[in-house]
Image 1 (cartoon, helix red, strand yellow):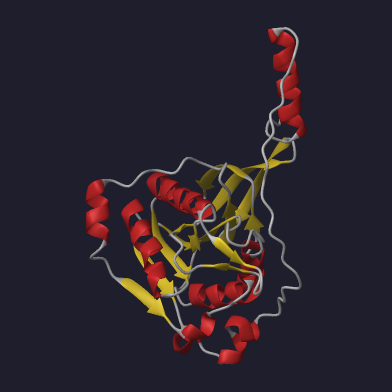
Image 2 (cartoon, rainbow, N blue to C red):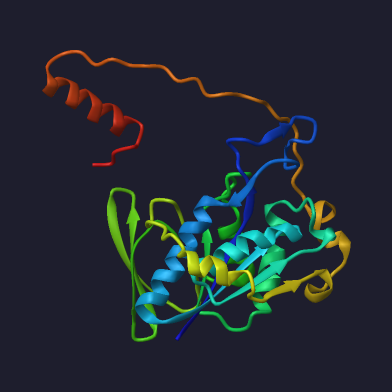
Length: 263
C-alpha cells in the first residue's frame, strides 16, 4: 500500500481580501479563508490513487491554529490523518522558509512513496514550494500530469509536454505538483463532514522540528518586498462580424491566441 503526503494551505479568499500596500502583504484580518484551489486538486489526485491502488494519505498544512479548518475539510474528503505545523515563530515565512519547514515536518512522517502539492497558492502565486520541496526532500518533481499508473513498484506517468504527451517511468519516492486542470474535485458527503470534526489532528511546533527562531518566519526569510502596486482588471466587449462560420473561426483564433484552446 502506498504512503502519500499532501501539502495543503489555508488562504484568504482573494476575491474579497484587502491588500496592505505598506507591508506588501494581504490583510488577512476579517477576510474569509478557504482551502487553496490547487491544493483541492492535489488532494483529489491522492484520493484517486487511493481508490485505484490503495494508499494511506496524510494531509499537512502550515499556518496559525485556525488553519485546522482545511484539515477538517481534508478529513471530510477522505484522507487518513492530518498534521498542523504551527508556531508563532513561523509567522511571516516566505516560500523558501515555508518549504524548509514543511520538508522537516514531512520527514517526521516516516518513509513516503509520494508527496503531492498544488502548483501555486492564490495568496502569493509564486509556484515555488513544489520545486523547493523537491530540493529539500531530494525527490524528483513531476508536473503537468495527464495520466497516472502504478506498475511493478514504480509509477508510469503521462504528462503534457508543450503540445505533446510524454510518458515517463519514475521510481518511488517522488513529488507531484497538481494544477486545477488535472482533475475534477469530489464533493464530500454530509456524513463525512459530520464525522471529521472528532478526528485527531497531530501538531508540530518549532520544538518538534528543531532549530531556532532565527531560522523560521520573517527572521529566516531572505525575500524582501521592494514595491507593491494595486491594480484592477477591466473587462471589455469584442464583437465578431460576418457569417456564423466566420464568427466561429475568429472566436477559435482568439481563444488559441490567449492559450485558452491549445488545439
